[in-house]
Amino acid sequence: MHTLEFTVLIDASPSTVWNTMLQDKTYRLWTAAFTEGSHYVGSWEQGARIQFLDPKGGGMTAVIAENRPYEYISIKMLGYIENGVEDTESEAIRAWAPAYENYTFTPRGASTELRIDVQVTPDFVDYMQDTYPRALEILKSLCEQSGS
Image (cartoon, rainbow, N blue to C red; front, top):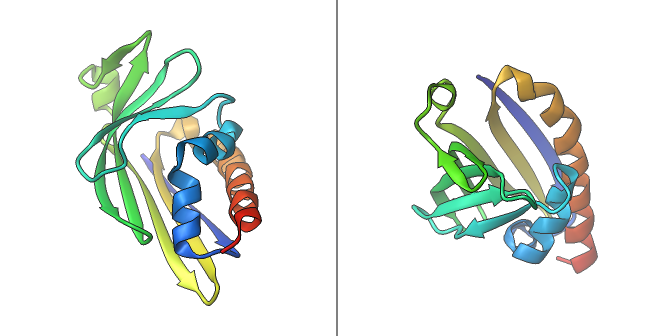
């Protein structure tokens, strides 16, 4: 398992960055960098189940491990979803799950430093290193357009 770190400085308050990142409408916009039509089903509340899906219903299933509004959110990835069926117990899943995505929101004057730490298997390193910076540029643009 590899842990990748991505950081972006956004000219907006932590609450603006948080809300823009997690609200359904804007979530769909910035995560389109990963897969057009990306969306989630579920809740961002601590302890809640959440699914991250593509337009065909495939994706990942997770639980929100920690949620400190405007400061930190941790997503515990539990498995894949394929053809509407969750797999959290196969040997292939147990080889990597759980894996975490952690988002830290740090005030920097009138701006916010957003740091993402994401655990990925070796076969996803190149994809994430290419795609996450593009997704964060979209998120930065959305946040800065909405104002701080």
